[in-house]
Amino acid sequence: MKRIGALHVLTDTVLQSRHTHAELARMAVAGGADAVQYRQKNGHTREMIETARAMRDICAGSGVPLIVNDRVDVALAAEADGVHLGQDDFPVALARNLLAAGRIIGVSAGNPDEARQGIADGADYVGFGPVFPTGSKSDAGEVQGLEKLADFAIAVRAPVIAIGGIGADNAAGVARSGAHGIAVISAVCCQADPEAATRNLGRLIRDS
Image 1: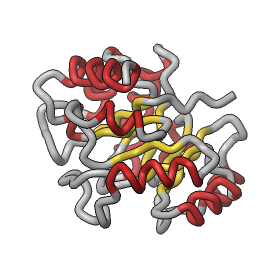
Image 2: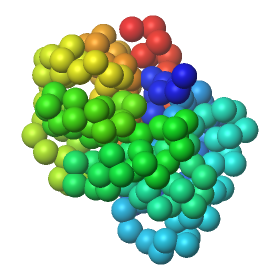
Image 3: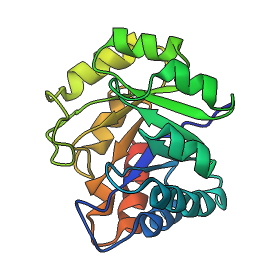
């Protein structure tokens, strides 16, 4: 049984430069993250593989899955636990053919039809958002809100991970909407104490 988890922390070194991806992974794991996603849009492939391997070792020590955003090649080379793919990224069906059966695949979807197709192609969970306005992703699309998130969670028979503008002030409401969990970037990476921020978010969604 694949463990999707409720609190996904995406690492980022563009919005902040105090911490490396590996350092953020270590703090997120220490704070109780259920999954860590390596998110790097640009860079040399070899360096990305090295970073992903370092993050994999950190996560593996606590049994936390490492997911690589977009890059199936990096995930394979680093022996990561899975990948997360957008609608315009590497096709989910091809990724499932390449990845071992036990690896996790997440897919971003803007509507139930995209979600159902992604699941049919082999995805294990669906990312939905942005739930709230976000500055972490310039092409995030139209803000969906909690009502659309609730409808989406009902329509999709798979774990739904909400993303976009989620933080300590609204995480509990997102959890109550029916989402399986949340994914955050700046709510952890850009905080003064990423470990404490992760721990607080986990408490909020567990107690909602």
